[in-house]
Figure (cartoon, rainbow, N blue to C red):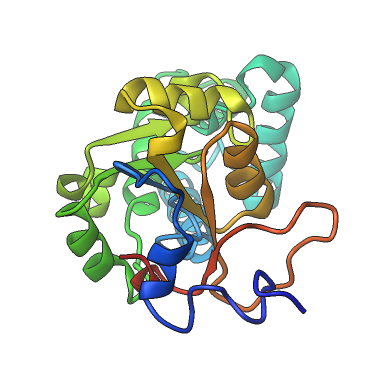
Length: 246
């Protein structure tokens, strides 16, 4: 098993190992995925969807009569099918689905604005992995930090906006990872060449393969000793914690 395997992260032995394996050109920018990289996203989305459904049942029971979490997810999938050109925009999909929900019950579509805010309030109540805040504070003193996310979390509402120089979203870029357009948008916003960026994320395809194909060096954050998918070339760099980055 080689040094890039999921079982033996190449940066796990010492923090100095990251420097030894960094690109020849030292990065000026570190870009980070958000969901499942800085916090576990499953519990966050579940809490937000449950809070939204409870709010709807209390205030607009007719709108959600016969509906539950799964049927509302199905509505969003239907919106994505109707608007394939907006499939990368998770906020649009949820907002449009809520408009459809209200309209079907004879309510004004504008009520979807308040409903979406209920969801987004909970969506931004994240619980960071233990290594995240100390690492971001330390790294922000040495690098310009950018978030690069397919999701719709708000850095300021999550409490870390002051540590980042910018946030590139799929919605703003018009495409989601691993599409090269979102990585190109990052380079444009950051004002640097691809070689001066190091991208860190948990998703093998969206983060590592996507960044690499865009010419951006990438680090796979493998918190749970997962196996690397055999369909993809192994990552050049693997870490188990953000504390491994210097």
